Length: 300
Image (cartoon, rainbow, N blue to C red; front, side):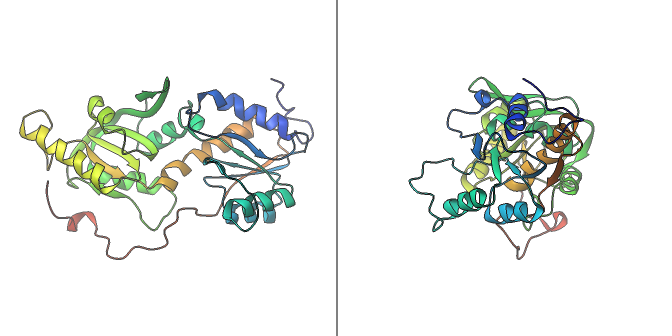
C-alpha cells in the first residue's frame, strides 16, 4: 500500500482506511462480524480523527463538535441486518448524522481483537502481564491472551491494578474469589468472555479477566473450580481457581484506543489530529450497595 506522506497534506479517507486494514486485516475478523468502512467518501480528506468504543449518537455529536472527519470505533454500527436508515430509529439517526455532517465511520471489531498488538494485548498490559500467548484459536485466529505476572499478587491487588488502568464506570470491577488469594497466571479476553471457560481451564490460569459474565455461566465456572479443588485437581483456595474478574465490556475494550492512537500518529502526517472520545458509552450510570473486598462474604 501507499502510506500517507508524514510531511504532506491531509491524507484521504481511502489512505487511512488502507492503513487501518494493514493494522487490522478485515479477513481476520470472525465470520459473523461486520467490519470496515460504514460511511464516508474515500476521496474526502481526513484532518481530525475521533476514536471511540461505540458509534453512538453522543459520539457522533462529539465528532461533529470537534470537527472530526472520521470516527473509528471498535464496535460495528450495523452488525445485524436492517431494512431502513430512517432517523426514526437509533441506527438510522446515527447514519443520518454521519452523512449530513460529512463524518466518516470505520469499525474494527474482532479483527482488532485478534491483532498483535490489539485489544487482547492492551488488556494484558493493564493487568501487568508481559509476554503472553494465545488463550484460544477461533476460526484460525488467536483470541485472548494468557501469561504470568512477574511476581505473584493477591486477587485484590490485581483487581486494583486493573481498575486504575480502566476508564471510570459506574460498575467498576467485579471479582469472584477471595481478596487475599495469591495469583500469578492470568488469562484475559476483552469484551464478552463467558463462552471461553474451557480454554481458560486448559490454560492453567489462576484468574480470568474478561467482561459481561452472566450469572449462570459464571456460577457454573466457579462450581467446576470447586469440584476440581475437591478432587485435588486445582489450587487451594476458596472455591478453587480460576477466579473471575469482570472489568466491564466498554472499559476492557477502551484500553485499545490509546495504542490505536499511537499507531495512527506514527503513520499519519503530524497535521492529522487524533483524539480519544470523552463519551462514556458504558450504559450504566450508578450502582447501589456495592461491597468492597473486605466485606465480601460467601465462600465457594
